[in-house]
Image (cartoon, rainbow over the protein chains, first blue to last red):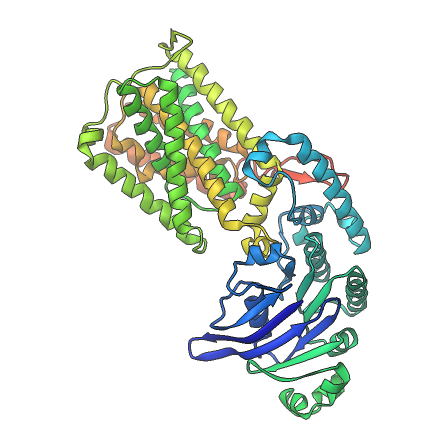
Length: 256
Length: 300
């Protein structure tokens, strides 16, 4: 579904991502881990089109998407979330969801002015969809609150659900549990598994080892922009290179 | 006098409502709105002086204004935030320079006199009262247009772009194109307002379309409350009255200009202290969870 080959990105003289290749198969959950500053978020920015790569090729659903602008990539069904959540703060929880679908009627200048009935019908449908999703995400009670007033963990959830509203084929989640209180981490896990059952593929950056190891079928490990290991979670956890990258002190083992 | 004031309020209200689309809803700070105003005024004046019907001229003024908006939007939209502001500032100075120096077309600083008044269905609109009604109709149309736009999914998308354009792009919104469309809609309205102005005063010169004018229009919008069309009109009502009122005090121009600046500053500072979101604040066109739309009063 997603295939990255030889991806390279330099900032000044620094190679943030160095000849990285990875693959995400349809219907799977794949983890991308590595110490801070190892280039994980840069990889996401490259895949989703926010950065231009210096070398390499990104294929999605069999099409070359290298160098395409972010909104075009998103419209093909590859949607990401951000490490620092980016909800629309001055819009309500409900609005955050209904603004997201890519086929919203009335987002064009002309049809917004000329076809009120079609807009209304479409909005009703999208509204119901959004409410169902809010119930699913336990945010229904907060639907009319401004997004900026939600606690961080709920903003994180809202951002995830907003991305779901676009009906993505694959979602790139950048640290879905960062800053999320412990009881909600388990919920996040449930949401992701349920969404996977609905046919969404995931590529997840995560520092929360138990979380990512429990979810992922395959894990890639990045260090200094290079791929140092890949495999099933249990393989990766035993890999001496990986343990060394995480300071070689057994922090990895302790975390798991 | 009062009719004159209301006519000016109609014109400036249109300018403010148009600019509010750009600054208030899309979050693009513009320092060049007078340029689109001027483009519309000159286009409409020149066309009607060449014999075209006045309303055709006004429409053409709007279109030329929108083209100007496209030019600024297209050239700055892929740059980040502040560059749009710089782009509009530069565009404003360029258009003013063109108005001043393309003497063969615009007569430069001497200005264009004798711009005809319009006539509607064969009835010439001569008196100030009649023109006032015309200006108010134009203002009402602009308001209806802007309100419809901002309440639609298009308007909601504008706000999402204002809130976080990176997030909007990540969802698949064509941020660049949408910004350009918003700027074009705002400058179209400014262009039409320019035509309305030119045929009202019947004389225009480049001094009407300076940076100061752009700032004045921006102040109207900020004063009334960003993202609130009624606020923009309210801003126009109050500040146009203040400005024209000062003019009639008969102070020497050196004093009155400075006094104007001082009064605006005091008003703005006072407002920021009391109501940081402007006189009326943003109207929240919140789509509520029961999927009925409701207007929730502004304020903080």
